[in-house]
Length: 516
Image (tube, rainbow, N blue to C red):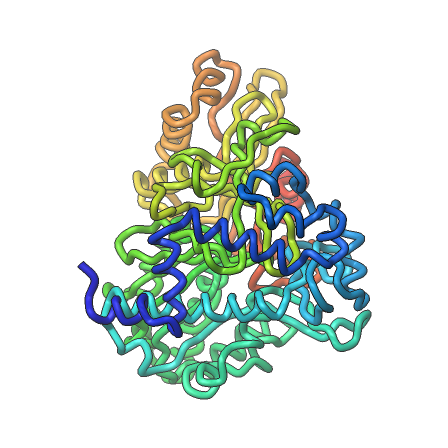
């Protein structure tokens, strides 16, 4: 039964949680109406004329008509039009001109640049506020509002090529357009510090400003939280002459940690150890340059509620059918739990059946809850083993639990057969705490993958594939690799989890003088 506070926050039209209550009650109808509205609004644009959005919007079965007329798209399909939008062209994919652009991958000069409309910025802001209000509704704990909120957004800047436009990471755009009440009352660090271009100086500046603050909520990627926490404790001790070992000793009133960018499950144990606050609540979210997609609405369930009324219409293609040109396009009406789907979005920023590149798995439907299972590129199938990123992550978590290990970062790549050695997977791992028994760690990973992946099991049983090879890296190796290979390191910069290419692996091993 809902509490009075829940009924107020979910039932009041001006609340950011009001759309959540509506789509939970009728998810299929909410998504159908949303698609029809997007088509009608963009009917006069170039894309609307090209695909006949106006006619599609009038069809009795708008979803079927849309899927019959509008194909699935990748960034290459819209690159030229996105460039025109950056140059100021109007009414291309969405009505009007754009002043804000999110770097989805790569850099502002060479990466995927996603136009972000004013409507999407407003919805993203509403989404972010809703995450905090959902915690308030579920926990009834107002204390997180009585101190400061610390966010670690990516950088945005005026685009030198296109004056008057802002380009950068979507988290930076959200920070730039945060509500006035948040900036004046809750924000721990001003944006001029949060947007400093040098990542190491930025972390140091944030730590120095917040050492003695009453920080009660944090928003950041777990990977960079670990780096910030270590620096925080070190500088706190240096300033106060203390011997603190945990974040909880510096910020004892920290109540909520909102995470995104990478899977929280890979870092939960390590964060628990570094923070050491038993009442801390973790809230996982899933946001992308293309839209904010899901959030953890149940404090006791790590799966995230798919937000079906946030300016994004969703389509899903089964991963086992992804290479099929005629693959069926599913919607929330017919997806099934425990199936891996590639995610496609149609949005109020003018993306039309666009491949985000992520893989999701539904844990349940009605209401629809998902886990992010990795990237569509995160699968190694060089020898027919077909190991997905999610399987590798869960295998690693089980191995850590069995051997008392903690992992900071990792990357997996295939290793070819040589001499008497079978082909295998090479796991480069930077441990926060190494396993008690490396052989048991390796065996646990292998046993887990055999248990959940029939392709892998068959090849192991046939002695056509070898045990995982674990390579333990010195502290800071992956960060050194990021700095060496990326023009800039930021909150959105991540270590790729797995690849069929050995480019990452060989580059990392070269840094530590290991020829692999």
